[in-house]
Image (cartoon, rainbow, N blue to C red):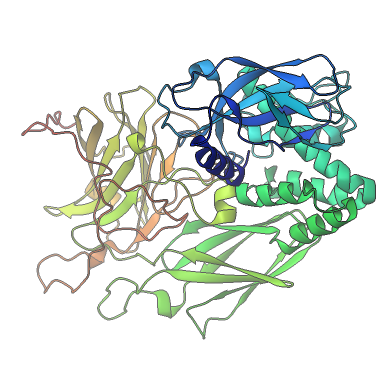
Amino acid sequence: MSHHQFGAWMLVLLAAHASARTIEPAMTQPAVAAGGVLVIPMQRSEGDRWPERMRVERVDGGAPIEGTLAWIVASSPMLERGWTRADERLEVRPIARAPADATTPGVVVLLAELPPDLRGGSLRVAGTQVDPAWFPLSEPRPDARKPALAAGDTPTLDRPDLLAPAEWFRWWLLADEAGCSPPEPRGDRESVLYALHRAQLWQAGLDRVERVSPGVARELREHLTATCVDQRGDRTVRVAAWIARADELAALLSTLLDVTRTDEQVMEAALTRVRERVCVTCWVEADAGTSLRLACANASPEPVALRISWVESRFASPVEIQLAAGGVARRNLDRPAELMPDPLTRNAAPGSGTLLISGKGWETRLPVPPARIVPRPPGYAFGVLRPPLSLADAQRQRIAPPPAEWLTTASLRKRFGRWEVFAECLRPQSIDLDELELVVAGEGVGSARVRMHEVGEPIVDGAPGIVAPRVQRGSFLDRWRCTIELPESWVPRQGALMVGVARSPGGAGTRQTGVIAVPDWMPIPLATLDASAWWSGSSPMPLTTSEPSIPASESSVPEAAPAPVTEAPTPKAATPAPKRPNFGPPE
């Protein structure tokens, strides 16, 4: 079920609720693959209890089919994320585990495994006739006699999200290409049935195209399973580059299952849709203030020539990138003068910038945050740390925040002549895996790294004889805080100070970073700052405008590269703390 279908089902349920006298289907023409899994959204009148099972009667007189009821709802934001994390994450639970509160969002569905001989005709559920839109499917289930396609227990950069029912169809497509059988969907029986249902609809839609044009069907499958080769030094890594956005997938599947069109019209419409979309995914991989590094992945089987320019500058020369077929390329781009801080007052940059990326017959825009290279009082804020960038995030150019109870904020400031990093880490409970990491580097001082947990001795990595920072921590009901005072030997006397902050609340796959959101294979992004520009009080304080803090109840979705704020916000309303926070002794 796509987000669009989910919303449509909810509208159907709300509209029909007033007239519902008992438990009955909320949709009478559901799409189903012949011999596959039938899914029908259900509705009930107030006061009725959901049964765990319901019978599906065959109007043709065949044996009735026993169905099971399940509750489907959009999943809450996850702490663990990765490059191939599903854009559409749904929870499919047995009806016995559905919330008792009738106002809780979600859809109740009837799931029924149809016998192989049932290829069409009307059905009856709770006395209501159901006339499904039947789609022929030569193989309603994968061939279990074939060798199994290895899935592994650890998510990889080129394999679909096995925990997401809506993504399992890709495993089936990949297995078909390899001559294998896909791994079983994960989860309860209801979740497995729903994953099979969605995959069967994709297979049936692609079969429609196959009957008209095998070449177009093959091209569609390539768009749904595309990967790119990323050369990282002497290592070659394959990363996913397929259509990842839930709205694009929903639109394509809707086209494939359009009963008002002939198979040939469906083929033409689907081909037009995939060829009109931008096949290149771009994201900012590093931001040094004066310049940034752009990464581009080409999912097309043909080379692509890109032309990149700044929308805000008439004088900056465009940059060209040659992208190999199925390849990844990177390029450093200088920010134009129009987007840099004022050279006289050294005040903040005027605003965000926009990269115009164009190829043959298409163009797209990628917003980038303002250049922030001059730290000013009250501090340089990393803002709310961002979760790892996924493929869908990069294609949408927007990223969902971490779960509210695990938000993290951090800022760099100068107090009493010394630089320090302050971080506030929300958490519902203390866990041993929760780790905060600070990276500091600069010309002539090398680099240093500090890793710490809520309790325990910090771990300091650096050159032999490195001076350890002074650390203070405090624990509260719903969060912990820490201050890391940088030794003077860590801060360059001249040149840039580079600082990066990250937190991994739950171990691998949960890293949150400051500056920008990056894929989880990237190192911690560093802010490159001119520390000498900090106002010392010996001269009039520069006229700067502080940007507002993020509200305590902030629930909007930040951009993948959002404009930072200048003050470390409190992610949510703070639990009352002691008048004298119990910061431990310096460690």
